[in-house]
Image (cartoon, rainbow, N blue to C red; front, side, top):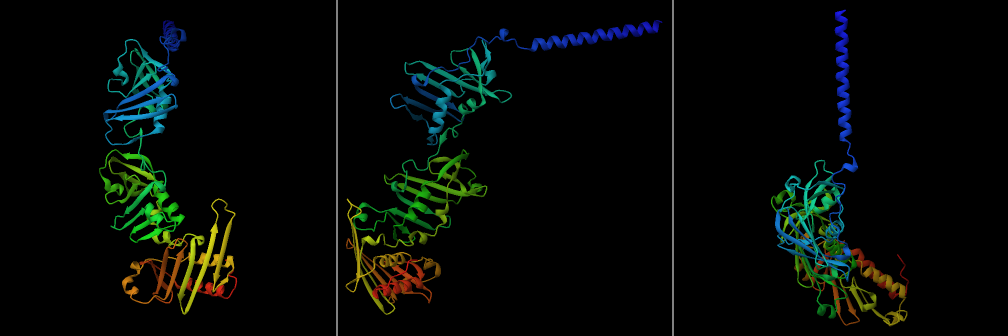
Length: 487
């Protein structure tokens, strides 16, 4: 009996203990539920900044990591509805990013917190906020100022702490807003390769220096050179050959491709250990604007094997970055750029074409005219041996004249240009323009298949003998009043 009574007592004690535990847990859970009416911060406004953009006069950003003296001030022009930027103590000479400038202003002009972390008697250092925190000073048109200081990221990484001078409240803003304001010195800027050049028209010189010591150099022709008659050429190669460039292929695939390179992102905040980027022995591009401003861009290895992205650095900017664009112009055969552009621009500019060689001799007279005020007022006339010739046939002949294939350089084939010039040319072509300007090409046989082409005294390349033979045959067809077929 006593044993049974003991068991009952123990069971009752256990039941009471379990009941107490359950009551305790339930009461704790109930107490853990935050009652909005008892929220100590319910009456605290979550508006961190409340200055409308229409009244914003300026924003000053300072105390960036690793650059405590660097400041950016953005001024708003209400009349033009635009911003301008000034910088103090810029340690690397970077250009400020318009994209970030607009994003920063948009974030600050009406910044509202998601919640309040603490209010009243707070210790700011507990939230990563101090006098050294990234600080934004917003000034209104009436002279009022709002200063906000950004703190640390919240423990779970979902937001950032921030406070406003003169307030005893610490707010929590979203991770997106915080990361926008939590920028370092490099993230908030854009490196502009060509600050003064928008197209090849603004480019005076492009020089490429390759790691093996070879150089390709070119410059824009002067106004005097163009006026003297450069056949509408705008640029001239000066190394490794001297020749005017007339073709749009050169402008589009060479100059514009070079001027369309852009910086993607900074990968290293200094210029140490350049060998791993291929920048210890780089390809160097030197751009000079028409105003004389020079930009030097060094290119290293491809980034992760991507042919459209390479490591780069610039003179005067102390970091390594990635450069994006088409780099085909760096490996382009320079003779491809002068192909069909030797010194011929338009058949309408030509007065005489003379060709001799292979026991034959031809002279073609061309007269053309276009009224600038009335383009429909156009006249074209061609004659040979005082007899007018078929207009379409003359134009088809002209298309062959500007199609000499440039198969390579004489130097690459070990051919002595000076020795060739001592010989009598196998073929010679002379052209006279309406302006009176004269040019020539002399062709010297290298073998049964190839000819060296000497253009105005510059032994430039070797070409196909079959092309000059084809042109001779076309001249013969014109002489015999035959129609040159359309290709």
